[in-house]
Length: 153
View 1 (cartoon, rainbow, N blue to C red):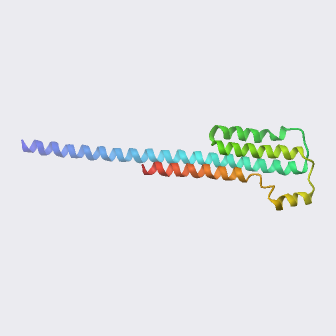
View 2: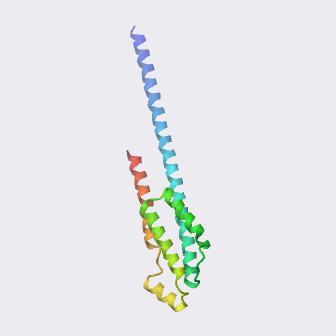
């Protein structure tokens, strides 16, 4: 009878060890998949923010030297902001909309001379994407912090 009990205890130990090994492997895999998903999401946001910065900068440069009533050049910028509305926080969207308004206002002003552009640059008035950059940095940092906190829980 003791031989049966010893054998059953041995089998129970093997079963518990196998179950613990399976649970550990499953949790590790789940954590890795979650981290990979987070990395993809962060990369997607970084690309979107980068595309917005590139297009906004191009349009702002054009707006300084061209006065227009046509908004067709702004279509891509509006599309980028619409995409941000889907995946970004309110501060990022608000900052993007503010930058877009600044570009539209600049298009509506008379063309600037080279010396006026230099004065704008020296005064810091051309740094119209500063709030947007800070909002993006905060959102990306919050994403990293949330991911790190989840890893330790």
